[in-house]
Amino acid sequence: MEVGGYNLVYNSLSFAIATFGAATVFFFAQRSQVAPAYKTALSLSGLVCLIAFYHYLRMFESFNDAYTLVNGTVEATGAQFNDAYRYVDWLLTVPLLLLELVLVMRLSKEETYSKGTKLALAAAVMVILGYPGEVITDPSMYGDRWMWWVLAMIPFVYIVWDLVSGLGASISKQPKAVQGLVSKARTLTILSWCFYPIVFVFPMIGLQADPGAVNPAIQVGYTVADVVAKALFGVMIYMIAQRKSDAGA
Amino acid sequence: MEVGGYNLVYNSLSFAIATFGAATVFFFAQRSQVAPAYKTALSLSGLVCLIAFYHYLRMFESFNDAYTLVNGTVEATGAQFNDAYRYVDWLLTVPLLLLELVLVMRLSKEETYSKGTKLALAAAVMVILGYPGEVITDPSMYGDRWMWWVLAMIPFVYIVWDLVSGLGASISKQPKAVQGLVSKARTLTILSWCFYPIVFVFPMIGLQADPGAVNPAIQVGYTVADVVAKALFGVMIYMIAQRKSDAGA
Image 1 (cartoon, rainbow over the protein chains, first blue to last red):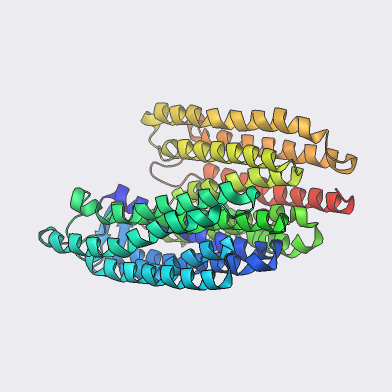
Image 2 (tube, one colour):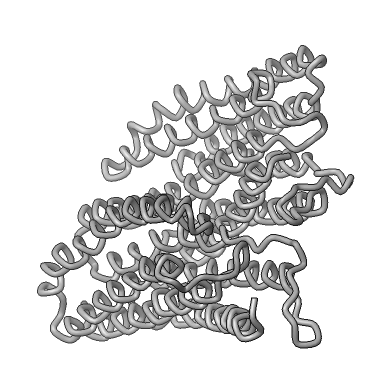
């Protein structure tokens, strides 16, 4: 691994630790500023960031165990960098993120329950189907990596389609003051989500790492996507909750 | 590195850890003492200090890994001192600091949003443009270091100009009881900010370190600037928020 790539991965992992730690504190502190109906959404935002904070701490440690930078040269210690942390994180956080969005819409109890369950389950299936592909780093096996990508894209497309069509109808029923913001949150979700399957195919389109080494393009790509999809998305959910609280909606 | 310089860097990093840890607790504890309109400003003060606390802990660790003081001699271990922590910190905290100032002014919703977004984006661009210059420590490349300094000064001047002119007009609309204090907070922001580009040019005006070693002038300079621009500035924001709460404004 080159020094430049090492520094990028190292600093982006630390950046994510700081961001998710601060975001966790922010969401729990600001929970007192929203109406009771939105406190659960704020709690979920805080939990998503807390879970991500934990996993980024672990990834940072794991990366430090796997590589050292001494006298300007990056050395692999032989210890394995544990890639699975990301997928364990997503298995927990992606369903919660979708629940946040559903909760802040304040649909009827039945709709909240059925939409929440469907989206959360689809998200879990998506993450589970992505993992067997992610661990394939041998270029001769990229056919299999593509296969898992296609399989994970089925629940992915279902979720995005549901956000576009299903939530679209609900947005028109939201108070005027937040319609624009809810629509932006939905766009942010869709755009940040689309980043993940693109990062997944980085190695197949030439953004390779040395065989068996950590791929900086993948690590930095997923980290940026996580910060947008979790922390920035949480801030939008908070703004929606606060405006709806002010409007008494 | 000389023993004197080593001790200065070591102790100033530890001083910053103590200051930012204490400041974080102070702002979250005192959040209950201000009116709801100012609680977000206090939360942001706390987050800025929490993020700085984290990065100073990391810098302290990194400095300890890079140097040891044994039998009165400073020895470089070969491990790299990670300079990037400061820039990762600023990328997160400088936009938040500007948001604090905007929030405590309590402008209209639209003004808060547009001014906050513009200033936060300009701050991020400024930090990103400064970093490529900061990592240049080879004196023969100082032409490039100057170039990045000039580029980063463009958003810097824009922000300072906006604080002087734009906030100037708003200050006259503040309650009489806090006009002086808000004006002082603005002056403190501008003065403490001007310190950063001066520290940046320290090596170019002769405050050199040994080649490849940590430069004590830069480390101590940035640490002092951070304590003033984050912790002391946060205390002023708190005083403004408290006086405005008392005045019912």
